[in-house]
Length: 446
Image (tube, rainbow, N blue to C red; front, side, top):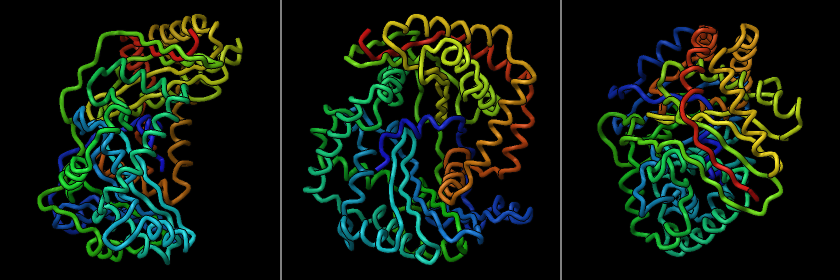
């Protein structure tokens, strides 16, 4: 399972949700997009469940996903890791299928299933041939809504998750990002590991896991998305028949759960006997719905988003101090992070940090050039379009747009938003963001 969702959580620039719509039938969004020739359609069932599809007749495959608006930031300290625990358990068997049935039925038609957990949502998905979409919908809806959470399976997966946590601790290049989140957010849920820790997973009772499942996996909190060679009305009827969840009322958008305090500038160093030192230097960023999110994407590209970026050129190409160096942003409903990562020889940590801080200060003071702006915008536009070359990416775009933003922008609208970014906007954001007090996380023999 794709469970350690730091990668998903750092999926660059994302926004929050608008007010929910309580209408049933095809929503205005979908109708308007159809009039413009798009194939995206949206239906809200009476339960509050939202179904979005994109018909792509030229494809022979379909990707289907059930996206639950519940993640690790919705957990109490005692239940830290329960969302990720559930992600494992739902594949272990339902009232109609064993764990082997779930995997074998999809693999028998050449399909694949997987899932991942992030700090704000959990996704269960399958990719199959178009003719096998009814089977995929049946299997995925069954495991999401009818998991039995057998006691023996809970104990088996408990051991699997503890091994996953131990494996994560052996990968300092991943672990350092979690250490950085903890430095910035402290004990707030956004500062905790998505997987939980050995101290929370080992004693977690089955009854509490089941209670979280029954209380949180509700129709208004769920978005179903599919993309490929499909018929929207058929998908809606299959979902209506197979996804049996408590509901009623309007869809529930992802929104700020509680106040997100950030700690003052701090440093965390974990001494480990590694070949490299792993560094993350950064600060609190902006939330998903901030109007500056497209400018942030351009800023990130120019500063540390590729081989032509300032950080890559200065630290790797000119001086050979690091193999991997990049900047990134993580955005949540109401807050975010902006940071720079580098992996270098332990004796080079001070020099890498000095160069990184100098580059951040230079950008904050003098901004970028017109040439850099054009390159950063081109990178953003290219990544949007090239990232939609398969049905899985198209399906994810629909679900994230609905669940995280409250609407699905067309590709043309996304590109227009990037084109509208000005040099003054990017430089103003750089002055704001890159002059904020920074925190530091380091793992290695330092």
